[in-house]
Amino acid sequence: MSTPRLDRTRLLRTLTLAAAALALAGCASTNPKDPFEKYNRAMFAFNDAVDQHALKPAATAYKKVLPSFVQTGVNNFFGNLADLWSSANNLMQAKGEEGMSDFARVMINTSFGIGGLFDVASEAGLRKHVEDFGQTLGYWGVPSGPYLMLPILGPSTVRDTAGLPLDIAADPWIYTYPISLRNVGTAVRVVDQRAVLLDASNLLEAAALDRYEFIRDGYLQRRESKVFDGERSRKKRGDDGGGSDAKSIKAAYADDPAPAKTAPVSSETGAK
Image 1 (spheres, one colour):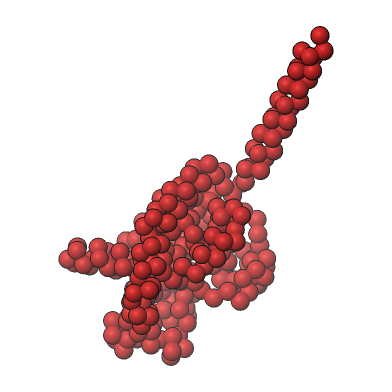
Image 2 (cartoon, rainbow, N blue to C red; image 1 turned 90 degrees about the vertical axis):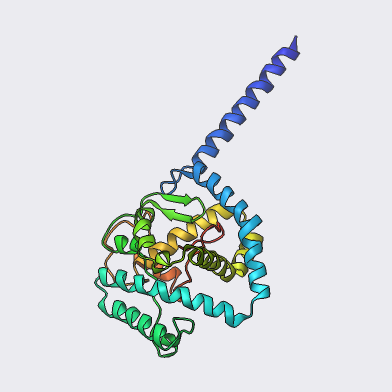
C-alpha cells in the first residue's frame, strides 16, 4: 500500500523540479535587449552553418594562397569606397572635421594610392573613421531597439537594420558594370573581410561558452561605443543599448581602435 504513495511523492517531486527548471529557464532567457532571442538563436545557427561550411573555408584558402600585399590591396580598395559614405555620415552628425578628413582620404587614396589600392592617407596622418547610417541615427537620439540577428549579414539592431537600405544604396560598388565584375568583386570583398577576422573567430570558438550571448553582448556594447565615439564627456543623446552610459562604454573601450567592417555571413563577429 505504501508503493503508490511513494510513487505519487516521487511524481510530485519530479513535476515540481521540472516546473522550477522551466521557470528558471524562462527567467534566464528574458532579456529586454533581446526579446527575439529564440528567432535570433535560430538565425545565428543558420549563419554559423553557412560560415563554417562555405565562407570560413574560402577565407582560409584566400589567406593562405594570396600574398599579403594582394590582400592588403583588396582591403584598401574597398575601404576607400567605404570612406566616402563615412565622410557623409560624419557630416550628417555635424562632425565637420572628421567628415572632411574622410573625404580628403578618398581624394588622396584614389589619386596617389592608385584607385585606393594603397592607403597613402593613413601614412599622411589622416585617421580612418568607420561610420554608417545606423550610427548617424543613434547619434541624433534614435534608440537602438531590440537586438536582431540578420540572415547572412549577422548581428544588428532594429535601428541599424532600418539604416541598412541607405547604407547599401550609398555603396559605390553596387553601381559597377558589367554585373559579372560587380558580383566577382562582391564575393572577393566578403571573403577578404572574413579573412581579416579569422584569428579572432578561431579564438572565440575556443573560448566562449555561449558564443551567441558573447557576440550579442559584445556587439551591443561596441555599437554604443561607436555611436558615442567613446567620448567620456559627451552628453548622451538617446537610449542606445539599453542602459549603459557613455562613461562605462569609454572605460570598456578606452584604447579600442576603429574596426574593419564586419564580414557579412559570418556569425562570429560583433561588429557591423
